Figure (spheres, helix red, strand yellow):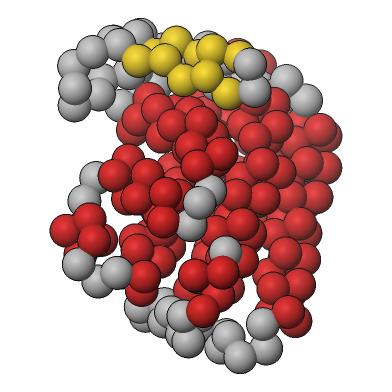
Length: 228
């Protein structure tokens, strides 16, 4: 079970609203950006991921952890132990889905920004994500956000391999963020990737995304369409 379902419920509600408010503020400051401009739809994608996982948390609170729900909906019922196991597995599913979904939302948008700023850069925006964000941060003079993206990228790689670290480089890695060094060792899980750890990063991620789209070069592009 998650360490505190009520905590998760409150945090996801706040973060969902924060992404919504950030998008609304951007739309107000930049009225020429259309609803399908990637500088706005990036926040839509983050809202969709956050809301979907939030619904999963609500389902756990009101149904999945309650024996009565299992008695009504499970063919063979469930013991206390099997309910606990199902909740633990669903919790892990939600955590992996959130990390992957948020990462995909950010990565897909960053590739659009690179192409908008320079259609030839980073193999036309098709290069490895590390090269994508390093180029983008350098171009926009936002290198201060690189430690956050280095950390998030390695966390995502762990989730991509079912909780174990197996990078293409085949070597161990570390990421230092806000004075804390995180170790990523080949074939080993990262126990520090808890809900609290992930949620503590979200406000910083929102600041990063806002800084990217509010950078003068990004703002100067007339339109950055979101593929549909």
